[in-house]
Image 1: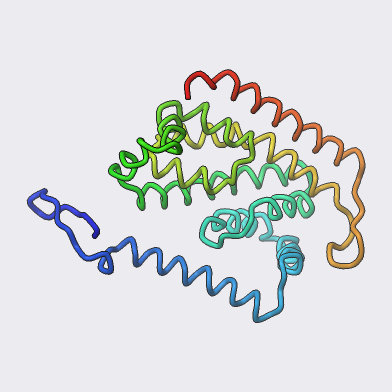
Image 2: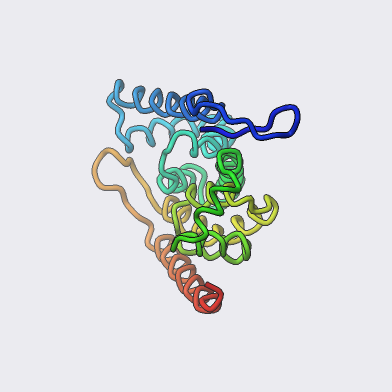
Length: 237
């Protein structure tokens, strides 16, 4: 049953099949199905899709297309890491980081808005008594540090976005913590992509050693920082 408020402010229950949220979820499933169907019909695997997208991104509208695709990732359910590496491969380290930060913040906002719209206060109350509920309530209570730590731990990006919206975390806190916590991972993955030379589908691509080394160093520092933060906040759980 879906609960809404009538004109008098009283709760009104409607059958679940008449829920507006169900209609949005069905439309979402339709978009994902159309995207997957297109890839299947044209025989496009993940690598082929990335190379086709890379060719498009090298056009004059490439940066805007990249940011737009990044913003739609929560709707397409496409993994974020390959696209981030693609940004480094196509645009290089500097602009790859800049465009990825803009796109990832837009993507985070889309997923946050969906999570906030689909969630409800009573869902949070039900989760509070469960083991997972302790972590969710901690994220709600100490949002900034929790989100930074989850980003540094490379917890699935959209999962954190949906959870933040569902928990009604304040948007400006969520975006600030996301941008800060995701920065080391963004740098590491973009640098990894920028180190690739040659074709992805023809033979083994070459890697530029110094760029890969910088990527691994940033990744290691990110994990060490997340471990330090987890120890500092362990008593709060």
